[in-house]
Image (cartoon, rainbow, N blue to C red; front, side, top):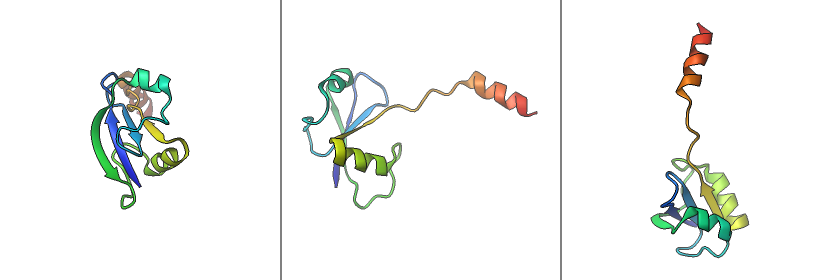
Length: 91
């Protein structure tokens, strides 16, 4: 299974995975509008991999086969104040 990954020019750390290069036919139009013009990041084969850097490989494979794309969103912003307050409660 091959996978082509595109970077969003509009949203930092947001990536779109599709099965074929430049084939966005199964990606909803509204998603593409918000994503912006996809910028090629890399091409991967998923068959010989058991993990990806920032995405669950099993979710990626399932989404690609079922809906034809996978959208990787940026990780949530960590609240340093919340971390500080929680650390203070443990003492």
